[in-house]
Length: 68
Image: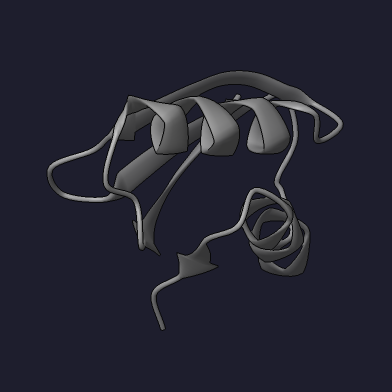
């Protein structure tokens, strides 16, 4: 099991949290997504290592951006 933490910018409400959780959760191998709205931290647990580009694309699909 692999766990990665990303910082997402632009989230302001619970709808934002749900959108990011849903899109990142669609990635192959993802088992759990936890979003902390206050800090923007997104913790992703997956069966395999995820590519940053895949996570970035999922976050962008939800309408937000990964911090650099």
